[in-house]
Length: 222
Image (tube, rainbow, N blue to C red; front, side, top):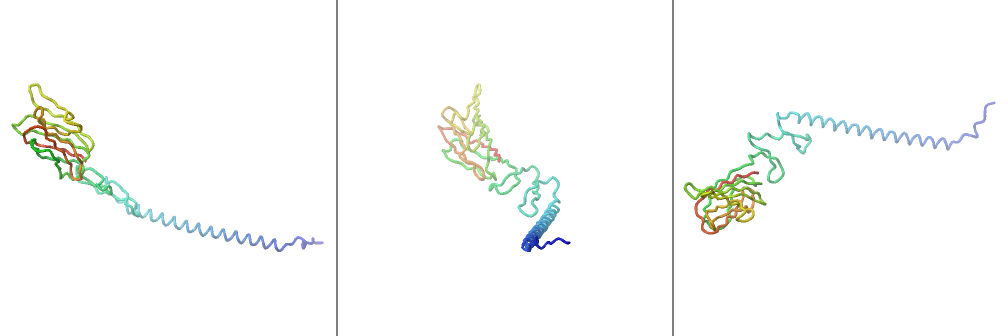
């Protein structure tokens, strides 16, 4: 005789299992659709990346590579002319090529009154300078050498004498760049007031009665 299974048949249990299977299938289908979408997006991004690299790959020999902020990601930074150096521009927004060095040639009458003098035409704000105060031909034999920045300066002057006479610029005041010292109590000194966008400003201070029109040479470094 066949067994009687009617007592163990439960329609509700079958319906519950069927619902669970349908839900699992739906979730699997959703995951499959999401995976397909992600795979498509990755493929598209990979194609765009490869296209960008291909487009950016034709770079000039020995060129510098920089970011371009766009789809390609990189670009060639144009090469500068011979003997130029690479700097950041004054605004701090882009690179630029420049010599980074400039020589100012001027004069100073040691008898001139105390005051500020701006030296321009440099093309950049110097970070450091090396300066010379040179006597006129046939004039008092004195020369001054100085080195400075926006925050400090140092140097010395030399006055010809029987045994020679060396005077530190600091004897005339802290951070003195140049000193036109023609004798005890007679001199004119220069101190850096500011490093400007196109050069620098010196404050010249007169003491006593020095004389002579001296050449001023200032080598500016970016």
